[in-house]
Length: 455
Image (cartoon, rainbow, N blue to C red; front, top):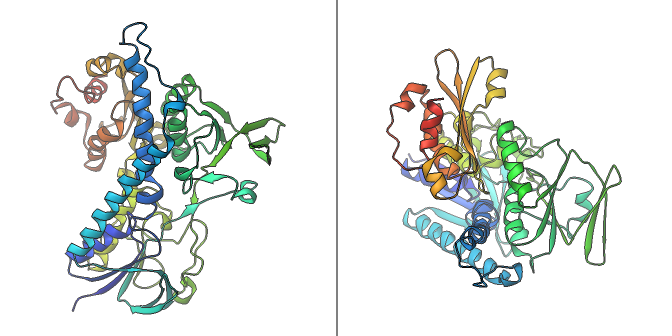
């Protein structure tokens, strides 16, 4: 007899789970309160990359200008950028991908119900539709993939309406002349990169001593230096004391008395779960701002209820959510799969790009390994020099004993694409010589991996 499974949320955790369940013969119903594709497609990964592509085109023009004849008069200024066209392009990309999802669900005969789901007891959910209509569904298993919302810590939470965040920044009515970005993590840095490229005066305010918490120090230094060279100002290790809004400007006062003023303040301090009204208490499932606890098999403490993606707080990345969704689906259907966070690529889509996987030197040493590292800079790579993309490096981390690959950090070039080669090495516990035996095409940016292997 086929299992009836309800998937709550159609984002990068929910829809891969639904597809895998269908492949395995389950009867699947997916409930979505907002737009198909979740935060990733509609307010996160995809719109931010559409914006970053626009910014990168502007950035690339700076390189082209060096090759133009003197006096040709070709220039770029922010006034030339049509903000409405930038937003329209982003919306077009989202609409196409959302349409593809709808067609895919139809082709796979996955039932999609629009409405807000809430558990009404073990084995049952209640769905409140767009017009307030109420329906009920029973399940043999349920997957909670409800995602998270932008987090607004104090004192910023008192100015939620006046400030912007990762859900609303893509719909700003106009391009501001200046922006203060609160938070030096991936979300904040990607948007800092974009807005700086299109002529906005950008500052980044971070409570911690440096950006990209937990990342390798070499990566942090390279990225920060690149941003500063382009005019981004960093205010690190600074705590906010208060906020003032007047005369079209927003001012953040720091505890040391410093005042930072901008036309727009973007709060990018992370995301938090908000599962209010989902009836988790009816199935005995506790939650907090980090979401609900799940084990490596995505099982929660509630029988036959699984949690995937941001809502379990294990790895707040879209591709982690997708793999977790597949694991939950397979385990519901009788498998015993486990999520391995160590092989998840961590990517920053600014320029220079950053891709990391596995352990960095400090993390490996903290786990008791004796570590060797090897690094090769793009400055010595032919393809990088020909493309004028010499910023960055490849860094490999090995167990000194047997030279097993423990991790890698890439800065510059197509780092977010090349990192998968090294994710495979970490997954398969390859050794230095295994990677040396690969023939790296010439000229390519991947040759930086080859160079690092011979250091």
